Image (cartoon, rainbow over all chains, first blue to last red; front, side):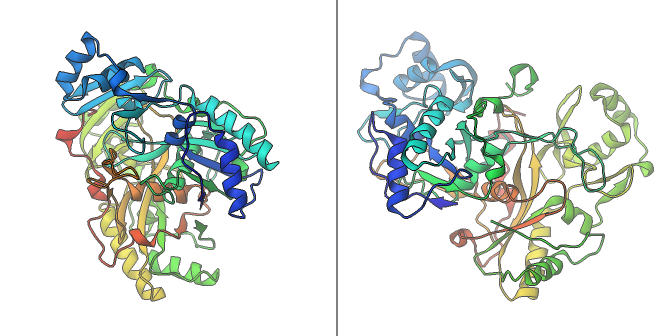
Length: 248
Length: 248
């Protein structure tokens, strides 16, 4: 896992894939087809102009009511509701929703850290799988290689404290390694049904990225057997169908 | 992340820490104080004799009733109940409990894969933090170095498909990196409160371990800033207190 240093501050419209390719080239790191480039959601959102000034947000009646209940800024709650399909849990200090892309996340993944300017917050990319495909195409053009791309964000979890990085978008990576029917060394069918490779890659990359915002990108090497020519189904296949989920 | 190859089959009473030290030495990999040795729960359970023959288990009334409801082997359900504090969710094909150590896991983490013999299953270690401390002491004796130790297991999650490896025990590693009060590059307080380092380390290690049982151990390097002299609080600090959890 290699951090990508030297990336400039990212703003709306910046060609993120090309800039990452440039930073890697400047650091003497050649990209390979089996590499996985893991990129923090925040810089993807900035490049896509998904930054909102809360001063421009007028909270509606539902947001005002919910904001009182959870104790959050009504303008923030209005944004969260706009970016969501439905509220999963609301309690003092907690607002967990199913966002418009289907991810279950606190505050629809909206936050202000590492966003320049008071009252400015970053939304998740509208379609982080599409973001990953776009960045992959740019990286291919910049480097000649065709690495996989993961867009990662820090999510909290039920039952366990602390956040871990998970994949909200990917291209060219097998997101879910399905073990159904595979056997162990004893010839016994394995009980784990599938490993969430894209989430484990996101977590591995997070270990080398400084959360203070300095290093939003890392390259994960040595797992080329999970990298594919095709962009593939994206991280969306990691979403557990609602009917199959006992915790909504 | 370096896989530890050449570990022999592990049985009850085997000195796991020493055997891992031997396998590393044989592979020419010297352990360092800043290293993190990540070990699959299954071999720890085997070394601790936490393997049970289902043929010896007599299901009680509650297990028989619950087994019908979830469609599982009543002897397995009996074992799950014995290893649990309470049932969190029961549905056809699903039995999620809070186990005796406080982990919330499907089937109390009991399974049969990579266990030799029909009808034999492995329980989780009774206290995986204590296991990690014991293995750390053995590694220290075998190698002279004092690496951190993580005991990892594959857990499913709500909302997201696929399992990821998480830490159920650790020694000498900061399990939870608390960011409260830290600031981003803009001087703004960060909204992530804590990063579950031990879980991210477990996930990183899983990427190089073959789930078929051949490589139960890996060494994670380059995160010595999270390795401590003291064994520390263990993975148990990753357990979200029940009162603080909206999904039980």
